[in-house]
Length: 371
Image 1 (tube, rainbow, N blue to C red):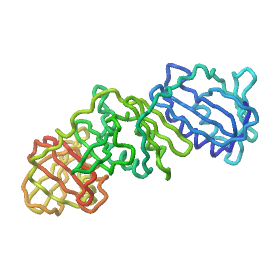
Image 2: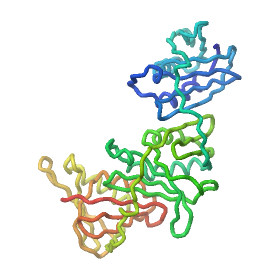
Image 3: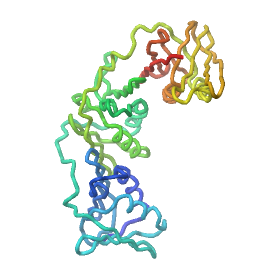
Image 4: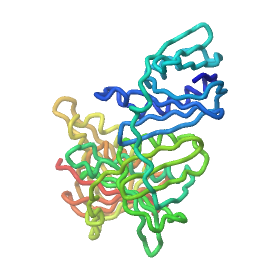
């Protein structure tokens, strides 16, 4: 294998693929990136056995070939070499050493056989549909903050993607919950998504996809079965196993009888929560909300730090005292883009619904704290 490639293009692709590789691996081959050079293209693949990322980059290929090299070390080398230096990759005849030449620098990396590199397999993915990158970003951003990190409840460690109906309209929906808060987001069902199974996309996959599509302007092609999902766009293909579990009936968590409704500016609300929570106890981050007709009083107390209060003007005429985790409230208010935030409450012990008054596509549920 022998090729020359632009340093910037190589670094951009390595930035993507190396993030899949775990820092500590008991299986040496999983620390490597698979490199395949042929027909003017260098294709790089990494995997952790649950997630596989494949990216192709244009290169001047003199001799076709393939090998595997340590992903993080390769990435660090390319990151540190001069910006304007083209990178030459040469694999020795035995396939054991890859030489990297850039400017006056030369590096030699030990390689492992490509036969040891695992593949996720090309299982059939019968359901397929396309989404604009902006829509996929919204599906992820509006819900991912509520994903659980508890390994014991593994079926909550991701986003539940499925098709359903809302007010008689077919929608594509994402839901995430950690048992303390729930986030739900809907968008019109795209063509081809009418028969997709309900699937739970793992947290790591969600985060990797979100990073990859940060600047993507193109359409994302999504293919899935009941056990795998694939995202394809530009010259990138990410394939992942899905969480093998049953997502709970989240509709049961959304309260139906809440009768106390207030509206507040989400930006003013979020800023006030942020200020008051500076004093709150570090573990619970508890903030108390006291409603008194058209005034909301936010307060926090800490035995070590002291106390804080702040008043906000609201639309509503109810009286109630209820506590919440400030971090959870901020995560939700950060997702509300309009000028109105509607809170629908019942009592200090029951879950509260939070919505954007100008956008019915998202809904959030948050459990209260004792304060």
